[in-house]
Length: 270
Image (cartoon, rainbow, N blue to C red):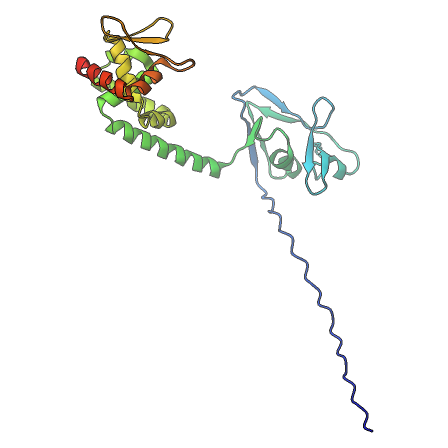
């Protein structure tokens, strides 16, 4: 009998999966860096903590290692981490003068301490970023232009309403040109608030209410709780607790009953 041929088994070498490449860490840019206080003050001398102590902890939580690491500024070390420093450490001080400090590019350890790891960064001080500051300045200038354009196109009544919300009844003493001037100044100095007020549909209603009180058409009680209407002192409305009187009045003007009163007031103010 013929022998049956046996099938040869072919050995396949196991495929080795390539390990995923770790994301490359951003390279450190060697350049001079400036830091400034954001506390609103610029003292002649301000010292930023430069070493860890019980009273003033200086720690950084390392996500890769999973624990807090002690920070320490040493002028003769290549790293701000105390556990990586070798030999005797010569401790240094971090002193801001008139609210700023410029660290030359050669002092990498100090720069990294201030830019990457220090717990007071963005709380007490910030790093000067000229490019980002330029972007912020452009945004602010565009906001100013938007506010100034809106102010230029507002009619006198609307301008008066906005200024009254900020400066009170003294706006009634201003001429039309003075109103426009003060409105443009207000829009330039505080464009965000100006645009909010310009878009507030209650602003003119509040202004009408204030003018009605000044003209004696409406009366506001001394406790700021009640509006009365007409010479007979008819009670118009009770102001809800914790609400501004003229905001409450503006909301009332938008009701069916309030709209009739509002129309009557407008006729009397003309």
